[in-house]
Structures are given as structure tokens and as C-alpha cells.
Length: 258
Image (cartoon, rainbow, N blue to C red):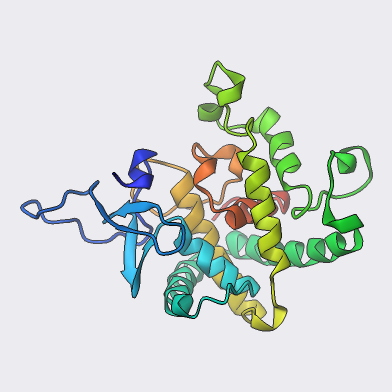
């Protein structure tokens, strides 16, 4: 069994770590552990240990969840979440003004759309009703439809390369499943457990850049300088569902530059 992220040609974790020694018993792509949260195998480049081993997909996701006040009730995971928050905070503090402004709009958008979802019938929509109405899409209830609509004309060239349409990244049901997970995650949000707004914006900015780094360029080791939407990255399936929602909200806010 190998590293899940290496299997998808993913880059290493943001904030570069030391390389494994050449004469060591493990090589860069060798699995070193299993992520305590999502259970994928990760190597030394795509996983870190702060009490428990954590992969590069879950690290920004945990920070974003805690910033929003999504608490899963896993006390043993509190220390790991704190470490993820601190790393995202450090990245967010160095983020450009437009990323921080976009993060603030993401926070506001999720709060507003959460309220709109409560007012809609069961918070469910089966069609693109918003596309024909004078109404903004809801990133909670319309996430899959929003991504597919934008992907039709704006998809990354990599995602358009497949001759078989069934192999295109947004053709299958995984997007609907991920959107459901993201929506149900936000439904568990406890505003009293969320970070203060100014701190939440910083952490969310860092989480967006960290997650976008995992989804963008499989060759570079550098932290991403822009936050791209799911339909503009080569590997959208490696975005945690909550970050799939947040990067979409970021794009709808019209901000991409660092």
C-alpha cells in the first residue's frame, strides 16, 4: 500500500519539511502512517504527526472546521485540530490582502447561505432553480450544481482531456456526495465554538491556500499564491468536501489573487 497523495502525483505539505535521509530505511513515497481522520495512507511528504498522524488533505480541513465552529466531539482530536489551526494561522498571516478579503467573504457567505438554507424547504434543491431566477446560488444547497455549471466552460485543461465524458472529474456522483458531506458539516456548526471573526478570517485564508496547494500543481513544492476554484485545478477530488465548498464560495466572491 502506498501514499494516497503520491498516487495522485500530489505535492508535499505546505511549509516544506526536511527530506528523508538518503541512507534511511524509508523513501519519500513510502507510507509512514495512516491519517487518524480519513484513514488514507500518507508518506513523510504528505503527512505530519502532532499527537496523531494527519494527512495534507485533512490538515487545512480541520483548521477550517474549527474556524467555523464545526466540532465533531472527538476530544482526542482536539490537540491535532489546534496544531492545524496554528499552521493555517501562520499561512494566513502571510496571505495577501485579496486572499484575506476573500476569506472574510467566504465566512460571511457561509453564514448567510446557512440561514437561507434553513428558510428553504428542508434545505434541499433538486435542480438548478437558481440559474433561471434573479437569485444568488446557495453554496450549501446548490454546491454541486454551481461547480458543474462553471466547469462546463471554465474547467482546467487537464480536466477536459478525457475523451470519455464519464471520466471527467465532475461527471460522476462523487461531487454530489462531497457536496452533501459539506452541507451536513456546516449543519453541525456551533457559532459559540467558532473562532473570533478576525482570527477565523486569518485561519480560513491559510486553510484556503493550503488546500489549494494540494489541489493545484503536482510538481512544485511551493505554497500556492492563488486560491483557485475546484473547476480550475487539476485534482479537485483531493479537496476535502468543506474546502470544496469554501473554494467555490471564494470564487463566487470574485477573489483569486494572493
